[in-house]
Length: 255
Image 1: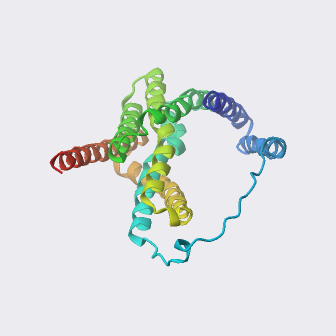
Image 2: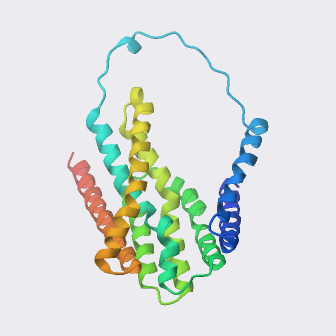
Image 3: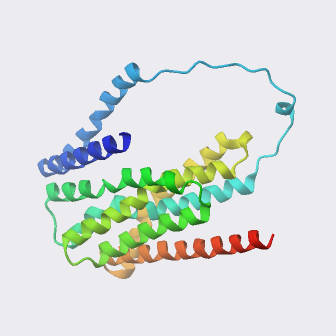
């Protein structure tokens, strides 16, 4: 039900923002007023659980070194994933402009249709949660890669929405996969700090993504070709992870 509610609310917000943008460039910011509703709702529906204070054990007194290599790996891997993750999210409207679609209401509506793939992807994650991180990363980047390439080559808007939906299906899996991987990588004592590094990597990738896409657009000469280029990058990452999964499986069989 949470997935369905998220899809419906996302569809409504994107559709409304498309209409508001047709009124003026600053009107879509009114969508953020929903934060007031969320804030009031948290007062009535969110509660603070009771805390159980435990006496520190002997093990807590041991000094454990911060796993710097793990923290750096999490930051870099998350940053790369975030760069590819945000290609569509930030630039889909520009891709539609290249296709000759400038009506803001239509852009909002088409974007809203594609977002239904996000909650479905998040729901499907649980069926792959027991798989290796390499397999899950391969699945994630395959879906995003196919979606981006399909958007770049689609001759009709119907196909564009279909491939955008496939891409959003991967996006729905992205955050759960990345967070689950990061939590498993970091020792229990440093999970709080590890998620801090994860957050830094994700938002750093979000900052770099539009710069990278702009650079790629200048190289290829077209936003749609930039989508294709990043889609190919995603498939290469998926193939690399697939080969790594096979190598790990062979090693376990030999062991």
